[in-house]
Length: 153
Image (cartoon, rainbow, N blue to C red):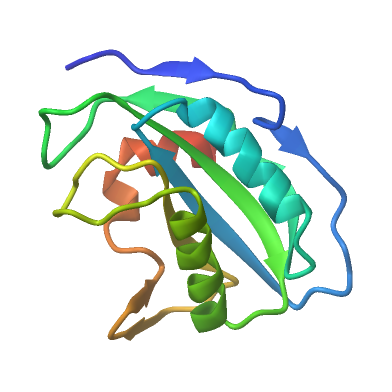
């Protein structure tokens, strides 16, 4: 197995005060392996920080780890961002998909290389399965790319 490596950046890790005006807390998995991913994570942090729809509470350090599924690609960088929001889980998903698009995400095939991947890992203590969203995120307990960054926050 290839080695795992931790990275820090301007905004990863970080801890900020909670804000009472938001109803929900969500853990967002952040990943990517195309281009300057660490710089893109910092730009994503700024994008979230400038949005009135979410408030960032915490971020993990960034984990560099080998790909799974389709393995003939560069290592992935993964982190967790803990946010507060008043959006529903469905509307938060739309917000995240829009952010992926802004940051150049293309969906060519399953487990393909990507500029940015944003997943809702947890949304409060909710558990539900709908056509386009499953919470908690499926198989989160089996992925070091989620477990290790979670352990750091």
